[in-house]
Length: 370
Image 1 (tube, rainbow, N blue to C red):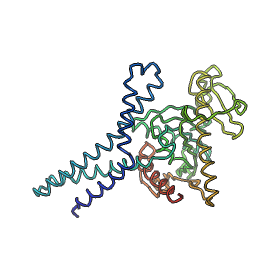
Image 2 (cartoon, one colour):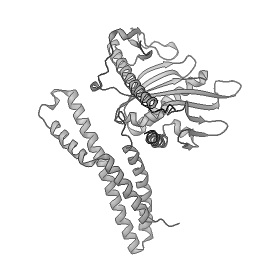
Image 3 (tube, rainbow, N blue to C red):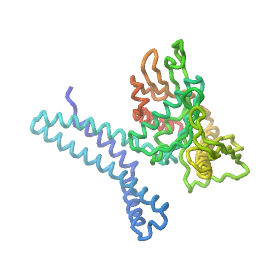
Image 4 (cartoon, rainbow, N blue to C red):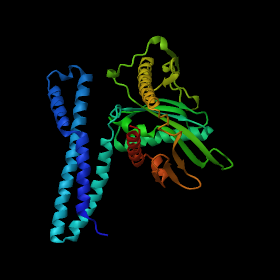
């Protein structure tokens, strides 16, 4: 069936109109002008931290504008290609236009999803914590598989990460792990990964080869910034220090540099052992604790609003995604219904389609609740 290029181009233009409206190119251009002025002052690097913030913000703003302008240019080039192929009746040119149309549609979908990340904390970097749930050693192994999945996803995109804490299980895998994804909009993207994940497979740890179901929980919080001002009184903190350790109890450190920080009013516990000094681990633990309290405050405010509106249904189910390796191969998100038949690729970090579907689902749910 021949492609209706006229209809396809009309749809692309309508989508781009929406993207431009959300992006706000005029406001973005004004922001870039302001940041360029601040970045050009002679004594900029007298304060390296402030300079880094300014140059990073300028780089992000320029990249944001360039993404939109580049897509506009590609659509214009496609229109010219279609016009040439149609006027000359050139099948090769029209085939080239069809191939470019497919690429543009895929890239425009990703750009459109990016514009949906307009939540209060979506632009933040992310702190991800994975915890083994029910399922014994299989759950601990599953937690490690999920950690590798997210780190591979970040690696595929060139996003820097930092592992903050790992608590190894006795036989295999992880009891828990916490890591940062240090790129803007990491929270907006990964927030849809929060929830309970389920794995079904023949257990490699069962000598009778029985099928095992295990669970792991993924928590995603926005990384705190200095401007957020989440103050925690000293008397609300209990701080324990201990020696860092690796798999099987292997000593990694001969000093008490690891830190376990407990927030007494909420019971939230954060452990850090990635850094070599106790002071560094304490600072990292406090930052993650502040991030979790920030998100908790946001959730409590949202829950209060829902209760006042008479709507108490939960937005997220206990189980949001299933990874089935036996008796068939499938990964399925239970909220969006998105599924693929290649779990190996998913565990190797190929989760963009799941994230995109999750963002669209989440925004649709938020509009329905509004």
